[in-house]
Figure 1 (cartoon, rainbow, N blue to C red):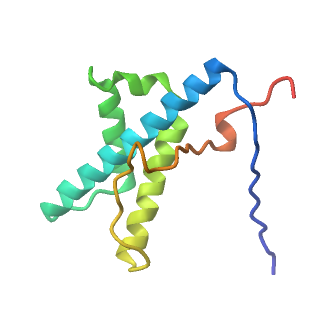
Figure 2 (figure 1 turned 30 degrees about the horizontal axis):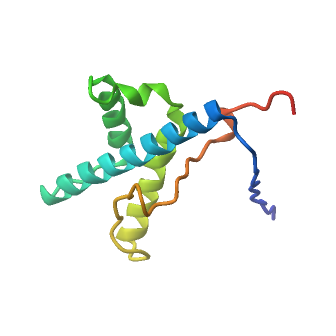
Length: 126
């Protein structure tokens, strides 16, 4: 019997002003994508339809091609996809009665966060 060990690492870093601006933009885009996907799923649910992760991902691609949401192309796509995965998990928990219906993320109350996978970044100069 093999056991798998899950590991997570937390890093603290002090970003430059340019990096802080990029992170702020990323946090805003992640929140926007999460809220738009939640709204799309809620509307689909009202029509007795279900939207899965693949359909949400296709919506994200379409949103990026629109003029008013073209700014989504300026940030890494990895945190945007992760936001959709988190929403998928929230709905999975809701449907299995482990959680309440997912809520929209607020600019003021929500914690600014973005999840990068290991393939999304590299370390340079330590």
